Image 1 (cartoon, rainbow, N blue to C red):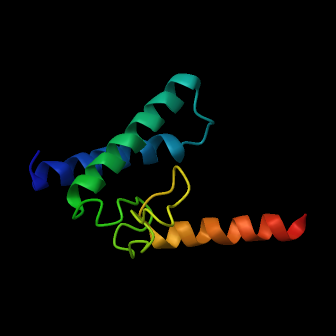
Image 2 (image 1 turned 60 degrees about the vertical axis):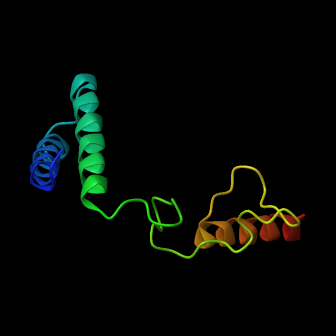
Length: 102
């Protein structure tokens, strides 16, 4: 898709989601499915408009710093950890807090 069509898709998807989310009544199961689809389309269109996932590959911190331990064979990161230094630092603090509580 072109940038212009991504922009239009984002607008349409957000309008659809907004119409359902801000209706006076709670969405039905079918409406909830449409809402989820609209939000996914909006996210995909917004990501297409962005510069991409960035060096970290992180959706939360795409332009964040890369963890210097990523790819270090002598001191590897735990399985499932990505390149994002900010997310990995949060994981490290959480693990330290869990160990300190015991």
